[in-house]
Structures are given as structure tokens and as C-alpha cells.
Length: 470
Image 1 (cartoon, rainbow, N blue to C red):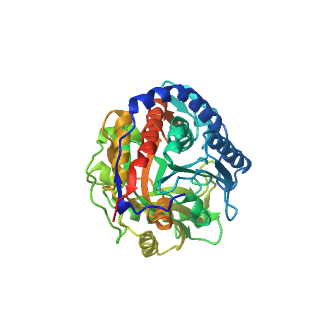
Image 2 (tube, rainbow, N blue to C red):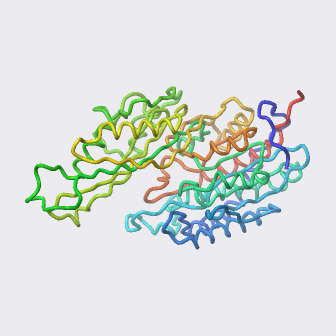
Image 3 (cartoon, helix red, strand yellow):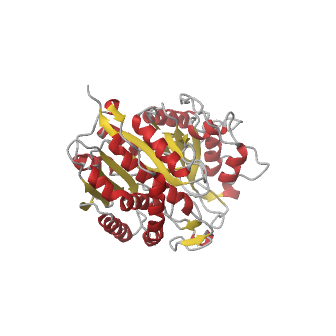
């Protein structure tokens, strides 16, 4: 494998490959690619604690077989510190030639209530141009995009001496708990000049996107206690407000009357240059007509470059199990998305300070700090970014949009720290209708084909990256 090149000394040279010829070849490969994707999503590879780990192992083994079949010479299953199995597949570069690292993950989110799905979540089902199943988009389609691109242009890459490493993680949806020690332990095997992270989304069906910014995330659990134990609400109610009421009062302080995050000390990034219409946002997010939106300013800024806070879980008695008692304790998990430029540690301190400062006088409030993930902002003028924009434009037949993403991929910061000389590109197979993490997750099969073509073009053109003479 080549030593990673300094991106400041990389420049595109040489001729680009022909997208029309590759598109014709790809058409013959797509039926098998979709069949392999369907087999992969049938494996319920949920890496969350409490779920069966056997399907995660089985999923990793299936990915390894796909990579071997795609022509990679060195394929192995690896893990560190008891983490879920990841797959590394490699074909080293010839001396002086670049190496591209392709990332995806084979684990998936839990399904929620299967009864809410139109069809069973782990039984892939085609309806129109979409394939429905948990993981069909996030991110087993990312795995199959890598595999299909290698099937399409693997021989050309080998002839050109371009190195390829595929890294398919097994615990991304569970927070990548062993990601940093994993890439440090396998630093030599994963070293690359260019890293392609296939775990993001395009602007819309028919419009490709290159993700150039991501929000980071911090979360915490806040516990409110008002009594030592539950007591009869008729005999004792009045002098003491129950814990769910006190928790609700505390959570209400996190936003102002406009729905803006009201935590002092948080930063905002500059507003994006592109905008999402309110109509598109309402459609994609499923916001009912007539319901006012929260916050002020541009929709894209509210999604990508400003902090956003959500209550994502509450521990309190369910309505079904409610009794006439004063509830003594209640908990909530809050998730704070932070824009590029915000340090997660400072955001966590601000969140905790706010919750403690607004604790109701008649309650005991305890805040338990949770995870922290760095935001990401790409270097948008690199030669690798220009190659990616060109590949996307050729695959879709229209220019790509540089877009932000409100979600978080915290491990990108780890990649940049462990491999500082590499350029990182964030691409994806999803579109606004994919419902990743949600009920009836799906993949648009026509967009999947374009993703595969764009990645194949990018891999071939990676050979045009060279170190300039100093």
C-alpha cells in the first residue's frame, strides 16, 4: 500500500473514463447486485446491546464473501475490545499509485414495532422503483455499491495499480463504540490517500449530492426525583408536584417561544448557500399541513448549521400502567445536534449547566453525561472533491449539490485524526424518501444504479491523482 499522500500536493491528471460504456456494462450487473442486496438485508444484523449477536456475525461473513467474489485478494473479519465484527478487504496499490478506502457498515437499526411496517422489515419487498427493508438504504446498499463498483471496474483498477481497501463496520448504528481503537489497531491496513464514506444521502431522487458538512451530537439523561417512593395521589397530591410534571417543566426551558434552542453558549455556523423549500421539508419529514415549524430563518440552516435539540426518550409510567399515585422519579434522554465549529465538550458543558440552572426548586435533578461526536466540515476545494463532483455529474447527467446533513457521523473526525493526509468524501445511497432508521425504510433502485456508476468512475479517476513535484 502506498503511503498516504498530502492532499495539498495532489492534482488531477490524465483522461477520464467513459461513463456511457460503463453504464452499459453496469446494466448487466445490476440484477445480481440487487439479488445480493436482498440476501444481505434478510440478515437482522442489529448490533445494539441486548440483541442477538449471531446475525451480526453472519452478516459480516456474508460481506466477506461478497468482497472475495469482487476480486479483493485479502479479506478478513476483525474486531477489537469485544466489538462487533468488521470486514476488511484489500488489494494493495502498485508502488507510487494511490489507495482508495471505501467505508460502509453492515449493522442496522432496530425495526421498532414490526406491525407498523407495510411488509416485514427483514423481508425485502419491491414496490414500484423502491426496495423496502431495514438496511435496504442504511447502509447495506452502501456495502453493495462498493461491491458492484469493484465488480464493474476491478480489472481496470488492478491493471492501473490503484489500491482498494474496503472497510465495512459492524456497529455504526450502535454508536461505533470501538471504532477509534479499531482503526488505530489496523492503521497500516486502512491507510489510504482517499476515503469514501458511503453513509449519507442525495439531495432528491434525480439530484446527486456531495455532503460537505455534518452536525455533531451530544446527549445526556436528566433524572428528576420528587419523592422516595410512589404515594397515593389523592391523599398526598397538592403540596408536591409529581416527577413527570417537574420533568416537563424543566424540558420546556430548553427552547424559547419560537422553538429555538435556548441553551446559552452554543455556536452557529454560516447559513448554507443552498436552500430547502418548506414544502419539500414538510413532505420529506411528514409534517402535517397547517402545523407551524419551529425556529426561524432558512430551513437548510435550521437543519444543518444551527443547534437542534430533541427529547428522544422518556422513562415514566405508561398510560396503560398508570395508577392513582404521585410518580416519584422520571427521566428523559435529550439529544443535541451541534453545527460545524462547535466543540462537543463545550456543548455538553452548556447543556448540563442549563439543566442544572433550571432545575425546579422542589425537585432533585441529576444529569448523566452521554456520548459526544464531532461535527464535520469538508475542505471543499480539494482535487478529490472536484473528481467526486465530476463523477456524480456524469452518473446523474446533472451537477451535484454541495449539501450539509443534519445527522451525525462522528467517526469521520477519528478518520481525519488517524489519517490526517487523506481526503474524505461523504457520499450516499439514500434520498429524502428513504426513511432511514424509520418505518418502511427503502432504497430507490434507479438511484442505486447511479451511485454504483459514480463510484466506479471515481475509482478509475483516482488514478489521476498524483503527488505534484515539490
